[in-house]
Structure formats: C-alpha cells, structure tokens
Amino acid sequence: MVFWKRLFAKNTSTHSKNTAKKRLQLVLVQDRLNIGSETLEGLKNDLIAVIGKHLEIDVEAMDVSFRRDGEQVAIVANIPVLQGSKEAV
Image 1 (cartoon, one colour):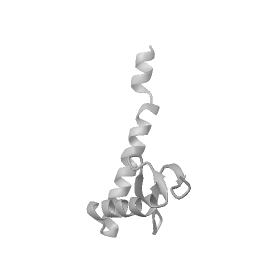
Image 2 (cartoon, one colour):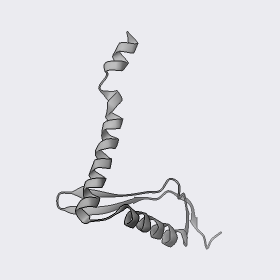
Image 3 (cartoon, one colour):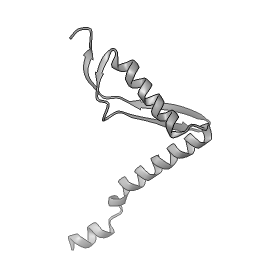
Image 4 (cartoon, helix red, strand yellow):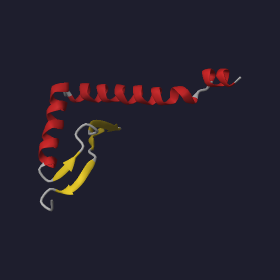
C-alpha cells in the first residue's frame, strides 16, 4: 500500500517541478537580457575574484542566477563564506 501512495503522491514531483521552473525562468531571463552562458560564467568568475580577495568562500557551492519580478531583473548570488576576513588570518 505504501508503494502505491508513494507512486501517486503529488509531493514527490514538487522538487523536480520547482527545479525545472527555476531553470526555465533563468533561460528566459538570459534570453530577454541577451546574456549568454559565457557572460554569466564571466560574471561568476569576477565575483569569485573580487570577493575571494577579502573572504574565503566555497566556490563549488556558489550559485549565481537571475530573478525576475515583473519588469525588474535582479542578479542573485548565493556565495557560502567559509571564513571571515583573510586579513585577520
């Protein structure tokens, strides 16, 4: 019985649905702003260089994306900090 409940449960596809929705939104915003993947990768590398001068960050877990709210577009950077100021170390 548990098998059938899991098979037909709506919550199992929620995560996949949200991930696909976010990816589609990113593609649409990039297309609208005429930003290629090379530009996005360059932006990410520049952020790593600038912030990395002052803080130790987790580059592998870093995520840079675009968020659209109506007509406005925001660059959203999630950059995990491993340690505070490099000068204090």
